[in-house]
Image (cartoon, rainbow, N blue to C red; front, side, top):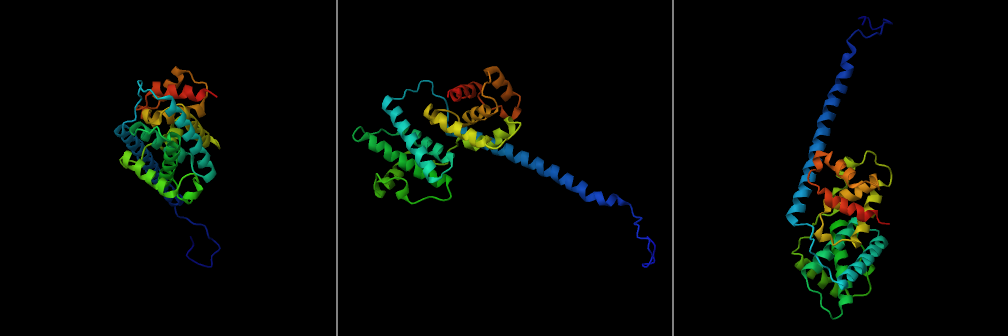
Length: 263
């Protein structure tokens, strides 16, 4: 540039490549950030699997559920889902509540006297505990139910906590969804995740939640969102094509997938 400040020659004679140095540095930063995010996601996924295995979720082929328990579960599921919608709770809260319910009735004998009322009280307590784990805004007790007195609900809450040994941070399929959607869904249109969540709620009536791995259920629901007519071979091929999903039991995934196919 001319040394005379009054000169009309304003052209910059310096090498313009410096203008791109910041862009190159930013690109390098973005690569590092993206790699860190991938590593964090994988670490989180492995942590979920470790917790799932440690807790002992597993298929029990010999499990026999009494007819009255089946009926009690259906009533509990109906009530929990109705109240969850009415109170504006997330679907995962309903799923967690029924997971508590299933675990409780598998560990604790239910008295035959006033059994129906006892089961309803368990349902209320399980939803309250699930809401405490999942919801930021929780309504007063009176909005859950008017059937039972507050002190009786509190007693049942404590009983559930004791029977479950205060292990309330249970893994559910909802914990896997973001990771599975990213890996199994090439596109993520509006409503995809909410549709998967509805499928997770629908399968609660078909299986005892404590005897099935949440990861397999989540994978089945996600694959249903991708294609509702996958043959077993195609489903297994899709899973095995993604090395990070090595832990999934493909036969179990297909079993839940076929359950979800039923209207």
